[in-house]
Length: 458
Image (cartoon, rainbow, N blue to C red):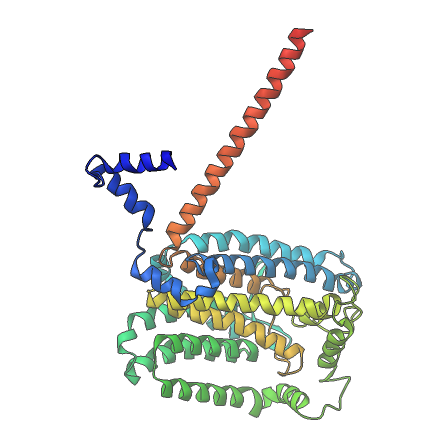
């Protein structure tokens, strides 16, 4: 007590008043530095989240969920395709190696996309849209017909789907156009023109190839972009109804849609042809029902033995349920939900309208397509041929999805305070590595000195 009292008196001086030199430390010790008002508001929005609600939460959620889905997809493509590859006379790893090759192509592209600044995407909006429209125009004339849909282009050894590239180009283009005209979107004329010119043109060209699944995903993409842009709700409702009627007339009423009409009736009506239209849906449900809670084990699926068509592609979620059980399917579902939450955070937190609209469009595309695919497998939706993003086999879809997620990761890096937080974390990691290196060097030097001392004693 005497020492403490003496110290306090010494700091106050002979007059009993605090000295000038002691006033600053006393203030810094007694009261924490005041945070900016914006930071306090962001922290008070979700106080129960604590450190999980930081400025880099969106970034780490996007990176983590994307990486986990990509790994799960590679493992399940290998597991679900070995039997069909052997039956076709190929190596059991044939489909897996193709998928892994495209994943290796998409990984550096995703990293580059995640590092590009926002202004570059605004500059690339119109060139990307023009290139996508040009490729879509070529599909009806020189495209390849696969499973009744003419949606593939073959350029030498490269075979890809221009509609997948059009999804990303349309999302960026809508973000650039609607973001620039956001203050004018209260007028119907200003809001309708981008939809007719951009979204309508892409939808029409995709439907010319009779690709119903991609057309529905594009419609959801456009709806998400317009919703976040602040377009009138009446216009959104009218656009949704018009798109539904147009798609229905194109694919269901006319003669080309008779097969799809049969699938819809088989899903929502009484299914009598168990060896025809109902065969794939029934065996997809068999796979999910066989797995139980924990599954039959990785690689032990029975449906992949050429009972379930497209087991490594559109119906890979059924194989996940059979081999990994209910827990495996819930894990995949949760990861897509995490992607949706992370993109919603970017939309809510980022100040740039272009980023908000583009992220909403990409989110409706990827997460919406995932839930459509899962809905098809569990029998809620008719079979329309939509793959599970990042998980199903497919090169152009995988690469485009990875690049799109790289774009959103770039947006998450440019959130207010995110760049500074990431730079601070990198500096902490560098300092920690330097400290560990110095310690390991000291231990090595100490061990060498002890050995030299022992040799000299001898």
